[in-house]
Figure 1 (cartoon, rainbow, N blue to C red):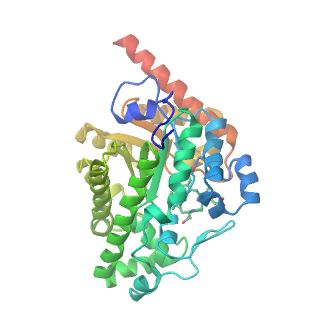
Figure 2 (figure 1 turned 30 degrees about the vertical axis):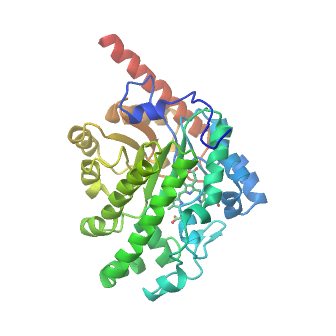
Figure 3 (figure 1 turned 120 degrees about the horizontal axis):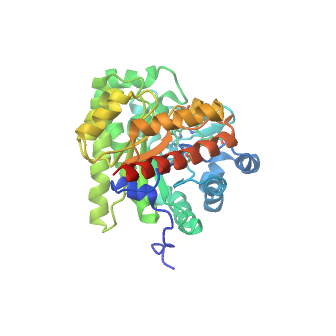
Length: 371
Ligand code: 1CP
């Protein structure tokens, strides 16, 4: 079997939703669906470090499949992290238990870029383990559902590389945008080109959709977003398509998640460069309607507040019903508005997934009767 021969797909709901086709029920996957809320993930992570799991294709594959075995999910997402990119470029990143990622030597001044980043590094070499994990996982999935590849977007990566860890204000990284504008663009451009290669390699290895995570928009102004995020999101979407066509690889649906960029969503949709716009839970139903009305092709993803998973099953069902009424059942992928938290109940996750399937099917059936 060559690396491009994969088992036929048994569930292509999410791909059909991306093409705007009529589907029997709304597809669903969950951001951070593999992770610490699953006991079987905790077993693996008690035996191996986080980056060891990422770097060992058989372990990354196992962890990717855990949620897909347990729940009726319509997509798997490869187990990896956005911070494999700064690592691949030469920076040290540690995963500190219960705290998250930590860079012992973050970038402080622009001169650190040349000292700490090796521009000659290639994604195809440094991140080969991700691509091997994708090929293995796609085969092992045996067509159960499509496999999503992903990357962090340049501004989110740059902010971690400067802050060194999670930060509420991002003031160190924002200082760069205001005081080292040219050097910030240089770094963002370098990251954007690396992200293009990383996404194309994931698609070449078997990823059937890709998602770009721009998680740190809450601290940007609309103007900073336009100049330091939007530009690079567009550069990446264009670059990936061009490279896929050069390499004669098939195009795959491109999802962009610019968390908290409510001020930039209409512009992102209007570019026509993204197939799917993923929304966080702060987006109003009016905004959702106008995204739909002004961009007839756009597919939307989201956006249940992850904390709604703490509610009773009865209330959860009500929230799902409301969400489906706002988004409708076409051109829509159900998801949370951000990643699931480690203390969430697997029972409620199952309830959420099944409710999306059942209620959307009911809605479709009753629409057909009316028609
Ligand atoms: O199941 C999946 O979703 C696939 C795996 C995945 C993905 C898509 C992981 C595993 N990380 C990510 C993306 C990611 N990583 C993002 C973008 C999505 C988002 O906004 O949440 C970000 C910002 C990170 C950075 C990161 N890595 C954080 C966030 C820190 C912060 O600033 O608040 C954390 C906690 C990690 C570690 C991590 N990555 C993934 C897991 C399961 C974990 C927990 C590590 C553990 O096991 O302790």
